[in-house]
Image 1 (cartoon, rainbow, N blue to C red):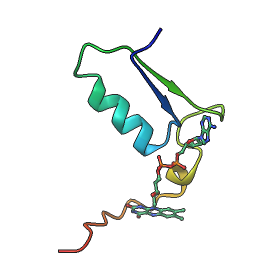
Image 2: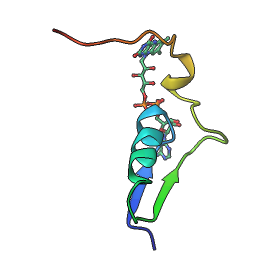
Image 3: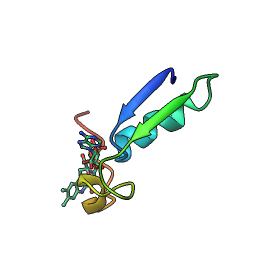
Length: 53
Ligand SMILES: Cc1cc2nc3c(=O)[nH]c(=O)nc-3n(C[C@H](O)[C@H](O)[C@H](O)COP(=O)(O)OP(=O)(O)OC[C@H]3O[C@@H](n4cnc5c(N)ncnc54)[C@H](O)[C@@H]3O)c2cc1C
C-alpha cells in the first residue's frame, strides 16, 4: 500500500514525487512508457516561462 500514487513521470509527476520525498510518505509513480519524461517534457526547450507579472 502507498500513501500517494502519482500517474505520469513527466516533470510535474516527478516534481511532486520529489517534493513529497521530504515527508514520511510512501509514494508510487506510475508511468505508461518505458522511461521517464517521454511525454511533453521530452520536447521542452528549457526556457523558463515566468508567467504574467
Ligand atoms: C515542443 C515543446 C517545447 C516546450 N518548451 C517549453 C519551455 O521552453 N519552457 C517551458 O516551461 N515549457 C515548455 N514546454 C511545455 C512543457 O514541456 C510542458 O508543459 C510540461 O513538460 C508538461 O509536463 P507534464 O508532466 O504535465 O506532462 P508530460 O511530460 O506529458 O508527462 C505526462 C506523463 O504521463 C504519462 N501518462 C499519461 N497517461 C498515463 C497513464 N494513464 N498511466 C501512466 N502514465 C501516463 C505520459 O506517458 C507522460 O510521461 C514545451 C512543450 C513542447 C511540446
